[in-house]
Length: 552
Image (cartoon, rainbow, N blue to C red; front, side):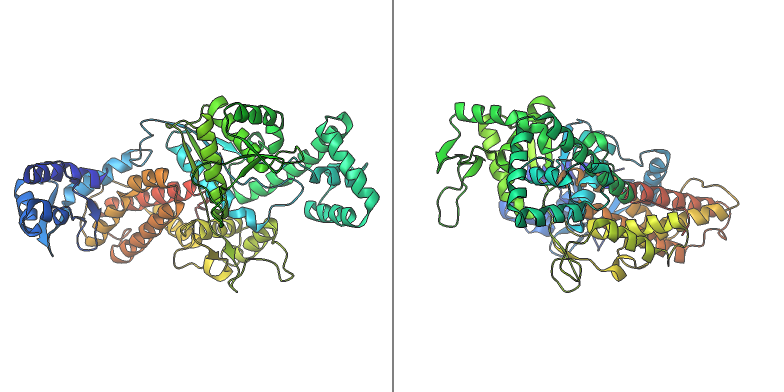
């Protein structure tokens, strides 16, 4: 039950009657009541009346019988308190619904989500964490809402570096490489120091790009070995990316010439210092000169922009997607804005297709700098997960539970803050059993399951007999609106914040309202509240990609 929509439906006709115009009642949750409407205040000027008089007129005209009571407060706010009957009915309806009152989308879309997207030949580092967990949470939520979600793991699996790597591989089986980062670094060192190796590496690039069968076979073995490493880490991290989601730069290689030809035919490319560039209107450099998007470099090679344009064209033209999401760090915002502008001019991004850059900030160490090892190197994601499980073992000795708590703590710490903000990677804070943390929410869920296991009776219809019950139901009934809000805003921290608030309300309820020792009837109602709270926490955490152990 969408309580905000219910109150809006009751107040809108009254506002229209008073204002003689369509008015949004602007109903919102409030600390001063269950909900509050402040729509009377901006009407004061147009109507030439004090806002309290307007609010009084609305209150007199509104049909709130059986739904809510209302009073005027302050300069003209309407404070709204829902009846216990409405709240109890909403909770029981939510209980009976396997989807907890959240319907599937009325107009499902095909949504392509570009996320994680590491480079082949390097292990995942903590720098890949944000794109991977934010993108996966969004993919989970949109899929649960009924959208056709296409996960696109845009691997960096093509380019000049592969000549160096293949040459360094020699006769070795790529599947025997245990440390991809060390292998890459060794190849790089050899490339920098050995002129003969550099020459052979460059010739290997030519062989790769021209389709030499042996070189292509070595490249494919190398890519496959890298993908196995990636999938093992994805499995540990609990994300939904699989082998069928790999769609790297190499996939678009044979489409780049056609992209350039079409852009040229449409007059969208200009030669600049030997390169072919697009100059979308409105983008300028620091000097004020038009900013180029380099599609084909002066040496005839293709830049990142060409691949991104080819990928976008494939997603809208071939996949027929109507929403494109790029979960990439905030510094790439301008690049993608230029890509979208050029694609729109080319007709590949029509007005009814949304392309959105889902940006995010950086992960910092406790010193406020970029999170790295003591020697200044990137922190491997596998090492982070190892330490997470080791530290979580102090909270949950069972290995599977320690894994769920440790990995959940890392993911929740990333998802619980505004994605556009930087955050500090702090083990003590993220593994705390109090505060806005993953373990706190997992513990709240486990507590609901523990109560139900101990109960001698089964959950029954929910009735409200105490203020803490009422407050808990108000939180529960907000779940659907939060989910649909995140569907549009693409801000997982709003779902995380809701779940934290729900867990806090459940803790207050648990302390104030005995469950197992309550009288018959009340006991079954409170068991129903425990069950509904647990189901909501489990579903919400699952949308964030966080496991919920039954016991902690």
